[in-house]
Image 1 (cartoon, helix red, strand yellow):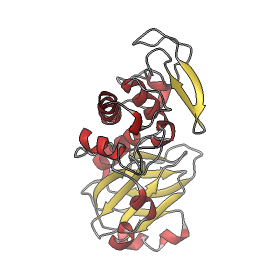
Image 2: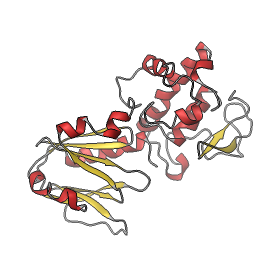
Image 3: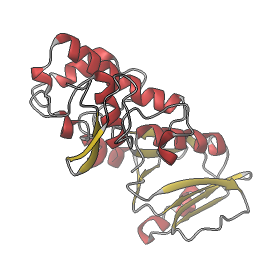
Length: 262
């Protein structure tokens, strides 16, 4: 599943193609959304906003398109009048005079007004977005030590969108490597130094992945952001030289270095 950095980069591409230009074509695959097509014709896209792994498309008429890619959803940008050669199922098409954006394969799609947006279950449940520039290391530290989260092992906590939105499996393992911690730890058991290292890594790693265009494709081998442990089982740790191991935690593949994660 794409994680926060991938969703944010997709939002950047969509914004470049669509923001501020009147819609000339609006199409939805799901019958319950088709009634909104006339209302969106001629409207403009004001902004694309990410909330972790969810994408919000805000229109000038006050409506917002909520979409969550889940495992298989993907957005494409193409010149208006062209159609990609794909077997994926088209769910959403929005076009202006120059560009068309297409959402394929996703099933979690809704159109919301101000009231339903404010009351949306997923958006109410998610925690702060790790890519939100206003989120600080002190904020993360405070959240780690809160009664709600301080007793939970990191193996599950770092996958919980209610804790911090946008984290996922590759970020989980990379954050713990950068902090030098095992996934079995809990925040309440850490030293002050460990808490600081973890809080810093929880912001630095996803932000570096976003800024340096890291992605899940080819396991980052061709990206400026490189994996230190994810998909590197059997290889030497670049920090200490020990051999990286692989297991399963919280039903997801997990990678760690037994030499420098304690």
